[in-house]
Length: 90
Image: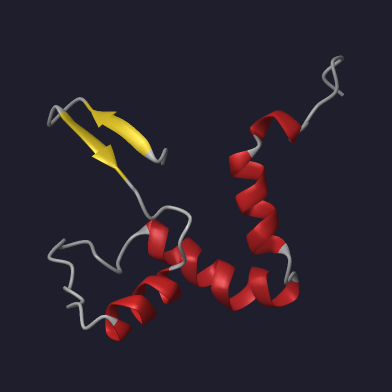
């Protein structure tokens, strides 16, 4: 998802100001600053494709390829540097 996007169905602009922060860092800061961590009320919380991919990344990809996290972040922040195909489509 983009850091800022408009949701047509609800006519709401959704902004993710902490998109570059890790979940672990956010939790640490909440505890440090005595901020409550509120449990999600979403019925699909922890039971969706996003959670499956998150677990796969944490348990396999990031362990096998330690630089993957920063590489993914750089790829998302600098899409102009990511070349998946040459001009011929090879």
